[in-house]
Amino acid sequence: MFDFRNIHGTNSYAEAAYRIIRLPGVPERPQQEASFLDIRTLRYFLKVAELGSFSRAALDLRIAQPALSRQIRKLEEELEVRLLYRTGRGVTLTRTGELLMESGQKLSEQFDTTVRDVRASGGQLAGSAVIGLPPTVGRVLTIPLVTRIKAQYPEIKLRIVEGFSGHLLEWLYSGRIDVGVLYAEPNVPVMVAEPLVEEDLMLLARPDLLEAALGPRTGETITMAEVARLPLVVPSAPHSLRLRIERTAADCGLTLDIALEVDALYSMTETVRMGLGFTILPSCAALRDIAAGGIIALRIDQPAMRQTLFVATASQRSAAVASRRLAQIVRESVFALADTGLWRRIPADPP
Image 1 (cartoon, rainbow, N blue to C red):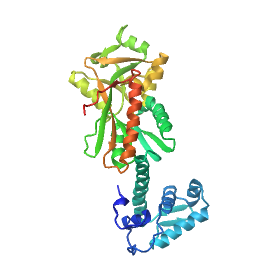
Image 2 (image 1 turned 120 degrees about the vertical axis):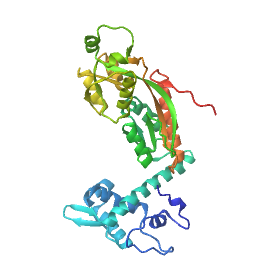
Image 3 (image 1 turned 180 degrees about the vertical axis):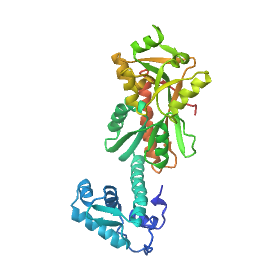
Image 4 (image 1 turned 135 degrees about the vertical axis):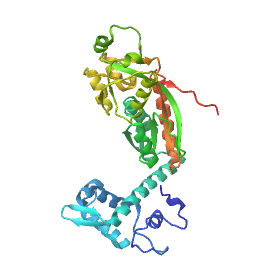
């Protein structure tokens, strides 16, 4: 991640950006000359490059198309290179344009995170922020989390994305998200993670089909040996949940009946509701169906299957203050749900 604040001897973001983006064939600018590459012009170019069209970019940016075309033309003249090939069907990037887009995206993100960090240090939190959640957690956490953030920081432009823990970790590392909620602790030096809560993995089943398969039962638990007798709907490998289920079964000397592989949370719970199989998930994945009585959740016992939820940030991210504040709000929101009985809090380490 570029950090224009470490470019000494610069008078502006534009001059720092000019020094950082070294495009082929572009002569180095004498320090006293001003550069046309300011953050607004850079973002105009990025939008045109993203959409491949001046007309669509102008609509998205809410400016007149001729004015946008002039801005980009001035940028090309300033840099003394061609950035775009203009055709009747739109625009495509030249090789130099591709380099500017790659570096420019990083600079644009750096600018946003730096502004957010400065504001956060003064008690404000604004700009854009992205939080990543696993789909199971997103079902119960998204609304209370967004409500809490908006109540404290109404100016923030918040985006919530969902993904499996492996994807969230990759996005956190690359800077696509600012804060991630993960089911696996990231054993990476540049990540800071804190365990929040622990949850049980449950067998989700249609009551009538479970009774048909295993007979009448009482109680709220089921053994792994009984689970192995059922046709299961599970994610495909190498999803961490799939690996966890198969490892637990193997430790018990059991072979599972994998009837269907599904990598979408909604489809997994829907296949159970429609009677196409049984699945293993935390109960938060199907709270509405459980409350309606269409699905029951039995805690897996002998052996128990539990997993831990972590909140993680990237320690090298420039907007460390803002990320820590967002992580704190995530922590508060998760603990509020834990207090309802959904999860079990993990005691904090003593200072």
